Amino acid sequence: MSQLIPLFLNNLLPVLLVAASGFLLSKFTALDPSSLSKIIFYIFGPCLVFSLLTQNQLTHEDILRVTLFSVFSILAIGLLAWMIGKSIGLSRSMLASFIITCMFMNAGNYGLSVVLFAFGNTALKYASIYFVISGILAYSLGVIIASLGSTSFKEAFLNLFKIPMVYAVIIAIFYNLTSWEIPVPLYRAIEILSQASIPAMIILLGLQLRTAKWRQYTKPLILASILRLIVAPLLTFLISPLFGILSYARQAIVIESAMPSAVLTTVLATEYDTEPSFVTSVVFTTTLLSPITLTPLLAIMGA
Image (cartoon, rainbow, N blue to C red):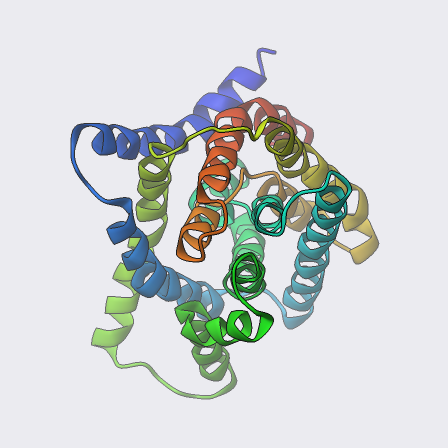
C-alpha cells in the first residue's frame, strides 16, 4: 500500500488536477466545451499526430509490431463489446455508443502523460504509436460506428473524408518517405500547436465531465466500465508477448489500454446523436474510477 500512494501522487494526480481545473472553469464560467473540442479536432490534434509520427526514432520493425498489436487489441475489445451489447439487447443507437466507449480510450490526454511520468521517454515513444493508431481508428472506424447509430453505412463512410487527423497521417507518411524539408516557421508553428494539444485535451476532459448526466443506464454503464478499465488491460497484458511486445513497449501499451473512455467519444456521440448522455456518463465514471485500477497496474508494470 505504501508503494501505491506515491505512484498515484506522482503519476495520476497531476493529470487529474489539470482536468479538475477544466471542471471548475466550466462550473464558474459559461465556457462552451464544443469550442475547445473543435480547436483540438481541427488544429491541435492533427499537429500532435504529425509531430509524433515524424519525430519517432523507433525502428520500422518496432513501429510495425506495435501498430499491428494496437489494431488487434482495440478491435478485439470492440468485438467483445459488440457481442455483449447484442446479448443484453441494446438498441442500435445504444449499441453504437456502448462499443465506442469500450473501444476508445484517453490514450492522448491522459495516457501519454501517465506513461511519461511513470516510465520515461523511451516508453513514451511506444505510447505515441498506440495513441496515433487509436486516434486513427477512432476518427475512422469510430466515426463509422457512431454514424451507424443514426445514418447509413455510405454516409458514415463519407464522414471519414472530413477527419483532419487522416490527412495529418498521410502528410506525415509522405514526409518520412521523402527528403521534403518543412520551412522553419511552419515547423515551429506545428511544434507549438502540438505541445498545446495534451494540456488542451486534459482541460477538455474536465469541461466535458461537467456535462455528465445519468438516466436508466446502470447495466450498460457497469459493463462498459468493466470492459474499459479491467478487461482491456488484462487482455492486452496476456496477449502482448505473443506479438513480441515486451519491456518498455509492453509497459506503455498496457497502461494506454487501461485508460478511461476517451473524451472524443462524447464528441462523436454528440455530433451523430448517438446517446451522448450515456457516453458522457461512461467517460465520467471510468475517469473517476481509473485511479483505483491504474495505480495497482502501474505497480504491476514496474513503475
